[in-house]
Amino acid sequence: MPTETISNFFRQFKRISLGLAVCTLLLGCQSDTQQMVPSFKVSEISGKVLSQDDLKGKVSIINFWATSCVTCVKEMPTMIETYKKYKTDQLEFIAVAMSYDPPMYVVNYAKTRELPFHVAMDSDGSVAKAFGKIQLTPTTLVINKSGKIIKRYVGEPDWNEFHQLLEKSLAEKV
Image (cartoon, rainbow, N blue to C red; front, side):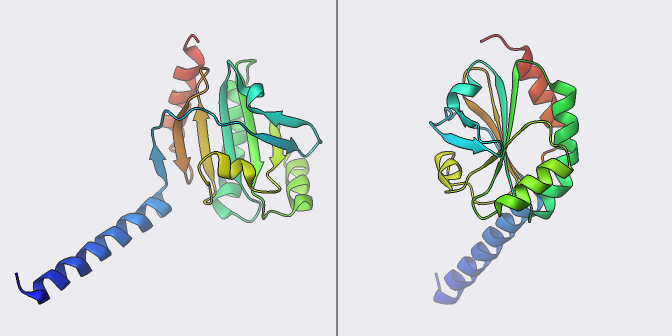
């Protein structure tokens, strides 16, 4: 095979790979996973410390976000509606602000938008690291009652699919 043909092949491969990566970032990435919830501790803006123990036996949503993230701010009203719609003693919801987000911005956002769920600060980045080195926001994890991460959304979720997954997970027995 001539060198030029091989070079063209690799150039095309790079373009396709880059295109897929950009498409994934722009349209949102969803992946199924069966990873167990890692050990973590994170402080709510109220000072209360939350850990994996607070999720036991519940369907949990962990949303990694930032006040500087346009998509995070755009999806937050739908997150609030979702929480209010499915709120039961079987649902836990934690919005984890990224380490680079200034604490006063997070507190102000949470208070002015009256966020009804737990809002926590990942001040040292350890929680994002524990959940798979999360860097892109928003990243939303859905965790079943057995403590397994069953879906990871990067970008805004498909809300119909998200709600169906919550309904199915809430109906399951442990």
